[in-house]
Image (cartoon, rainbow, N blue to C red; front, top):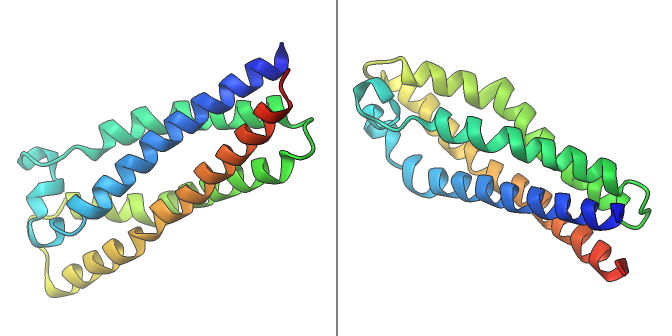
Length: 155
């Protein structure tokens, strides 16, 4: 029974992680290519997107499910390297976000206009941010492998 529960928790983590990945792809493809030229787009006070609402709602349950899924499935040795990969990829992306992306995004949200130097910083932020969905894809694929391995051994 614990194997089935562990598999369910992994599936929940996969779904939540996929939702987060979809949000990251949406921002990368649609929002990030526009906001450096239209700062109001990322400023809720000026009618722009409030990205915090989505990200705060998505990340906490995903991370809880990811950690719980790893804990519940840790005894399955074939899955362990994939669990480690999923955890490392996701939390590396989150650490990078907390260290660089979130503080910079909050700074940009507080500006009225971008100077040339700030526009250059915004374009660098956008370019670097493109790596985050790729890193999260590694975590999602690793979770998928764990689910495939677990489902293959479930009775």
